[in-house]
Length: 311
Image 1 (cartoon, rainbow, N blue to C red):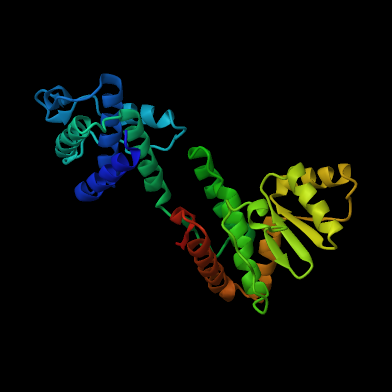
Image 2: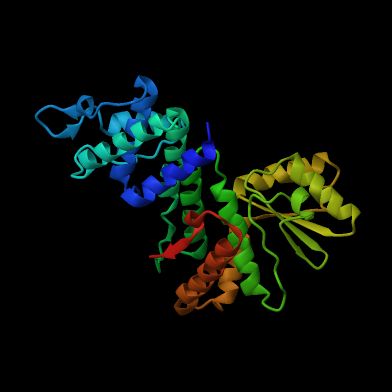
């Protein structure tokens, strides 16, 4: 089985038939599972509900059942593509395509289904986060809302670390604005310190900043390495992680030697300073932060869903 050729054919089909909407994705996900359970080739007649002109068995429940097997809880389409005008046409083209793959020795429904699941994940990821600017809310509440959105997406998309990536790049953007005279080095969130030979997420002179949403013994060991090398470690984490990190530092005999701070407050304090504590400068300051953040994401991440739009 030539997997590379199979994926090339799938990509060509997706591009040619413009399979990117939630309705079309629902159709191909459902039919891929149908092929897994019933085998190839398929007969178009068995997939049409008599008298309705709809794809037999297609609906929200059947599509979500497939997605749940991959840890995806987000609803792809409320009707699962059932009421879409183009669903029947998509079904006909896709069944013919699957049968062609089968005849060419490329009909492996399990791999085909998994490939479409990756396209579903990309569909969900295509939507940027929304910074909801409300003049009545403080900077901290706005940052908290962004991180809450990231946490929700992370819970819905199994195996992703969205919140940590957002926090890292928000801090990176804030550092750029706060100390423009210093060149801040940025890295993709998934790039480990060991692979990149970094001592932390940000190294500024003799200070090393570690960003974590869930502090553990690993980050404390990195801090000890920083101290042994003559550097000053800083841990930025979520509010609930501050006490945990302090306890771990104390257990390691490093109490008082690591600055451990609430990342939301770290961001908020600088945003107030950057806006010169003027209410009229609050939105422009957030716009500068988001502009820097989006540029960092574009240059260092492959996932465009991490972008933020101001609404």
